[in-house]
Amino acid sequence: MTSPAHVAIIMDGNGRWAKARGMPRLAGHRAGVEALRKTVRAAPGLGISFLTVYAFSSENWSRPKSEVSDLMGLLKLFIRRDLAELHQSGVRVRIIGDRTGLQSDIRTLLEEAETLTARNEALTLIIAFNYGGRDEIVRTARKLASAVARGELDSEAITAESFAGALDTEGIPDPELVIRTSGELRLSNFLLWQAAYSELVFLPCYWPDFSREHLADALRDFAGRERRFGGLGAQDVAVTAKG
Image (cartoon, rainbow, N blue to C red; front, top):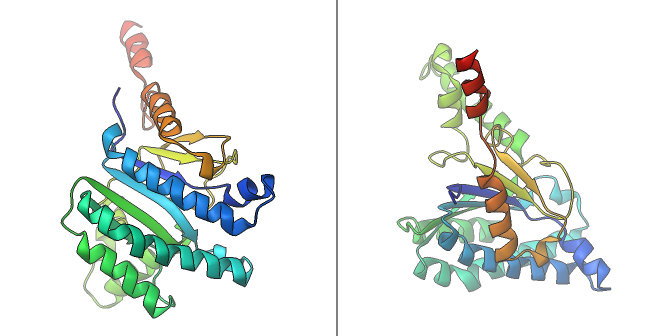
């Protein structure tokens, strides 16, 4: 089975997982962190080189302040508790999203995680934090427009490739597979540019229940698909050649 080099996951359903068990939402988020740990440990053995997870969207700030505070606390705890293990396991951490306006202690933790693990090669873990696909595209457009205004860039030199190189994911290949848990069938503003030709797998399980077996099943689903990128599939090409 050929595994995708880059898998992206929308980790959805923590709150509903907790509600179904009569537990507070924070318990669901804590269980979701444990599911993330298991997934990160499983990814290299399944042939995955890049794993992107949607940790906190730019729209999540609209949630109750208490829940946002809990999520910030979990992020800090995850980095402080898990960074040494990630580093020892050869995991490189990259953060994508808008860091302007973040609390200084959170920015420091994010930078520390990236700096410490910068040379690791076993797996690149990309954490989408304060991230929104539309926001990323707008920020990139502004960056390129400013370069044009300063005379540093010719507008005619802006191509799809150069635009992609100015995104938060610079140097990271586009995800071949995007997985979303909880049964929702949408991207929710996640990697809108990068996922243009990604295969999508939607799973009914809530994120805290996500396991290595779920990931392996999604990879098998991916392996059975034919990726055409707007062209003809192998069967179509054979029919065209005959006829």
